[in-house]
Image 1 (cartoon, protein in one colour):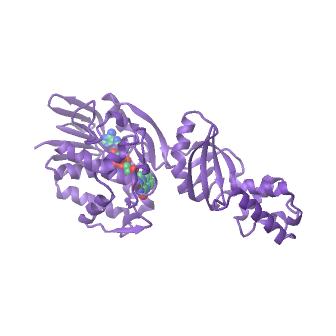
Image 2: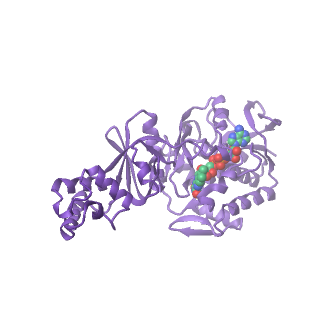
Image 3: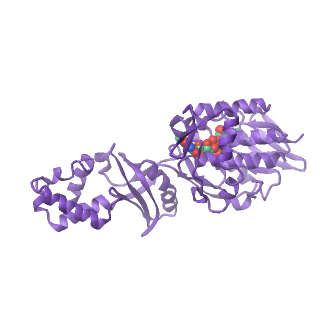
Length: 405
Ligand SMILES: Cc1cc2nc3c(=O)[nH]c(=O)nc-3n(C[C@H](O)[C@H](O)[C@H](O)COP(=O)(O)OP(=O)(O)OC[C@H]3O[C@@H](n4cnc5c(N)ncnc54)[C@H](O)[C@@H]3O)c2cc1C
């Protein structure tokens, strides 16, 4: 019987271990934390958005753009839903985002742990792996608890995101020592820090809008949804979705800006006409009262100040230019992006092991036969919405099956 050692007991490692054990391998799961699956517990605000029914290649990113989809199409969202159903986890659908019916991330983790136990996977926690040594007859893995021998190794040690859950980047070192190249690892699905001092004034405001990321005059990405304004900058799902592009541009030392459009359903011309009509309909309202009922008071106060309009000036006396200034602030509110929040706050990382050195059919290393990869350690990151866990399930399945086969 072939022995497969899985390094890392996160979502991808557990899936790889289950699949390899089902395919007949003896499986040893090595995890340096005191328990497996810590990150799963914090996913989806404790509810675990474990996949999404809307699946397209563009939901997954990599320097090698075709790579993720080749893997996901082997074990997709439907497969993940049936897999969890077999383990007793029914799913709840919220606009295509799937959660366990109990709305508890612990249900997903418990189901995986029970399955690992049923398949007699040997779980060794508090075991840190420091080196993988390939030999003529399989591998030796150096750990702080001694050496582990295995015919196959599946490296599922995660990225550097949320390191308190165990993914401290040590998996990258294991791969690098074996000659694997890395695509620079940067925080993604993360908040953006902005340079302007007025953010303290508008902290706590949430508003629907579109956020676009600009670098050196080029628009890199755009997303719409609820934007959260914070004391340090911007957050919320649309900001998370575009953060990977901002992180890369900042890494390339480009000047990065975010443009916020707080009225995305209107063109600039429509907005200008709308403000003009509003001013004519309510000529006696002062500038500070003019936008009440349309936008959060903290935001409209800021815009009036930035537009240079005197707060007490009546709307009926606004000049064309003043209305134009307000319109530009509402439609193209440009702020400087000075950085991302750290890996501690990031949900995932962009970058990782260069996938051109990994076979997408099997997830086996092209450099070290018998070594497989799964999960976030690879240069693959998904959009927010269940795609990163789907990547963990898909890649864990493909690596586990081939490592055992
Ligand atoms: C707050 C938060 C919320 C999220 N919400 C969602 C969501 O709702 N939906 C979604 O799809 N995605 C979500 N994600 C992303 C998703 O959780 C991850 O992409 C996914 O869990 C990654 O799985 P993984 O197995 O690749 O890595 P990890 O889960 O990070 O697992 C890696 C494991 O390897 C262990 N390890 C690392 N190095 C070593 C070593 N040297 N020796 C031994 N063990 C080692 C670690 O301790 C860890 O247990 C969220 C992430 C965060 C942080």
